[in-house]
Image (cartoon, rainbow, N blue to C red; front, side, top):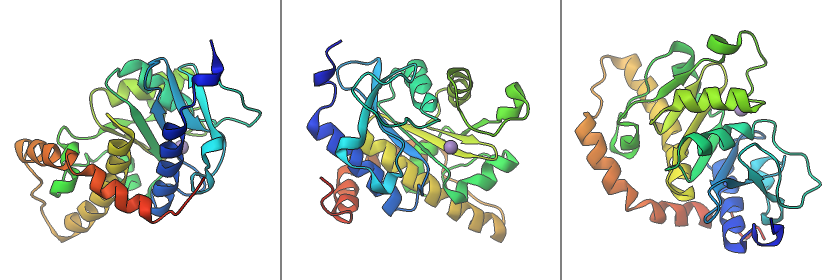
Length: 239
Ligand code: MN
């Protein structure tokens, strides 16, 4: 394989921006990661080396195969949990981008196995509900991390056709049909969880119906670039 053409300059810049945006929006801290499938080689994906998302530069982006092996030149350590990305891309041909985070407001929903449903139109993409993954079901006591292909496949199977999977005692993973959509979904999964928790404390919650959620999601998908441009304007020049 010719490794020289694997890292398109525009795409590595967009992916580095996605990392900075997720940090700026409080979705990731020192940990968490975002990837994008290679635009022409479906068996490859782009992900930063083992760097805090808020510090990622375009030159940190590495191309991996779905087994998590680097196929572009790098001397840096990879993320331990890169198998989350490879196994979801393997299982879901429609997915072009994956965000994994430990964003705080989502954690209680994973711990209680309570479904995270759309409380407002911005989270319409949660119409089909969230999937739940409990690492203990198949693997017993672990350090909770998705540190190999088998754990990654187990998580991808739990995700099923959903846009978001809650990982008990760990975090969540969202998918999208573009880098921008996955970032949008990660941001609004966190906001939706915060609002749902507030509403549940007040009383019974009327969520969006599945049709309302679907219609809202369709409308929002046409507006993502506007939000992306705003989020991007906050992070400055990162090249
Ligand atoms: Mn993690």
